[in-house]
Length: 244
Image 1 (cartoon, one colour):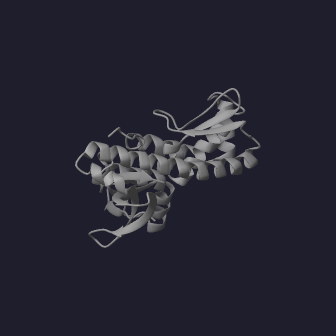
Image 2: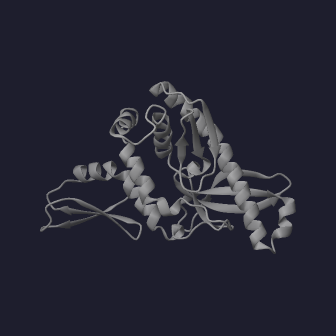
Image 3: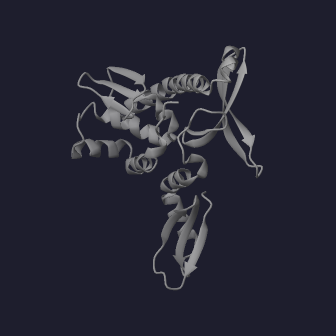
């Protein structure tokens, strides 16, 4: 459940939600009970979480691929931890924040040879970015192929081929040959938003447009697609990787 603060007023007649400086405020009349407020917060939880992340002071700048930078991974804000070893690898752990809360950390272990680049921050950032891209693509291969298989069975829409790569301005596409493509930076998105994009592209196998029939088909197989679309819209500025 999302943490929130209730601000009550005798003059207020309706409930309203607000995210201010990363904090969720619920403005409510005195007569509205907590159960009703909880239900509204739960209903709008995706939008609220997106707004909280968007307003986080840790997320106001693009990731520069430096040690300690933040970026989104599977819908959560993670901190980059860069180190060097004989074996390059990438893995997720947790670290204890200043208030002792455990938070996710993405460990980027570079091959020892990259330690010589410590005096050249540009070259080091390029090495980190390349390692991250490889990790995201590897994760995308596993996660997206599994989701395509699942939703293909559900929708009875099966692609002729699947491509996974990085795009600069789209999450996926479908062509007239029945091939669908996905952006591996989808690994920044929450699980349900990834599901939506997979269903979206599969539905294009039947309707290669955005007609009313297309959106009706999407809604049949993914009823909360509007929530996922709103998350993408709210988080648009945070979902780009700037070149180092």
